[in-house]
Length: 473
Image (tube, rainbow, N blue to C red; front, top):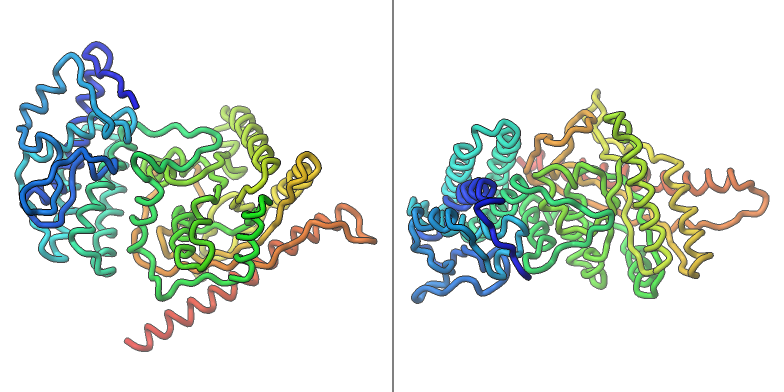
């Protein structure tokens, strides 16, 4: 892939800013590896899966080309009239060239944070965020995002210690994560109506799954309704459509599904085929964007936020119309696997009890999907199957208590359980003696009542787990 030249006349200021910030993101983590710990990973090869690095001695550590370049040499490169990157730069888009320079810049620091213990996992995080804050303190908007990121990454470090993540794995994940998050802060990706997961040259899907893996308590997490999951697999393989109508609790619902499906006998590859109907927050919030890049998304504006701000309402409605047309086309093609939250957003806890409750499904949204399925069957003969799905995942990156349209919410990275239940298929069929309106109501009730029932069971099981742990201590 060709990476355009970065010329002084058109991009010097922006590229210099990118280089400095990305250097700040990479400097502490990279220098930790530079201190010489065997097994550490760094450099362009880490980010792209390419062979941009070179091996050094008997160590298993990778280093980027010209890793010993001083910071002044790197700055000189960025002051030159043009600088072209190679294949490794293309993986991170427009700031790819800046990323390679940042890694070189970071290697010149020589700060040498050793990764010897759990305490130093915290130290890596602290020093990384210190450098990042110093480079962004004059940018008020970016500073707010960095502050949110700092709180999240501090908890993420603690969670990795609890999950017994090795220092080498944490170091590798921090290097990758600071790079892709820095890129999102500098130059947010613009999502198409249908976004396909970016798997090459950098695999955002695998990175996102691996990033959140330490948060999930696998021993307390489970898939229920496996007989229905088996049916779903068979339907997709036969070229028919499946729509999951689910409650929604956390931004990491996609990764939770994917991690849990990994251990299933015949559905391990199914998660990567799932298309999520996604609201604007996961495609516009710089801290959510990197994870969204690894998912298949149909991008839509939720009804909860479509009138905020009022002057954007018509534009958002036009966007949603295009999204529905694309969805219709996918259903007519067949073999489409969709996940949608008819509530239009995440569940929230009851103020009095602090217990999460399933948000009501929008009945018109449910009926819309049913109508689209009927049309797809008449146009192409492809049948669509509807399965309710209950998710108890709010312990992982829980949502804020209130509902707001603005991006930039605080996030938690504590460990917790994730449990999902594939409910029984609900057929869209005519029932003698019932009017169309009555049939539509029954279809909605059958979907929503199953989600409520299964979620109640999941919540009870989780409460018993917590009680048993509390009693044991």
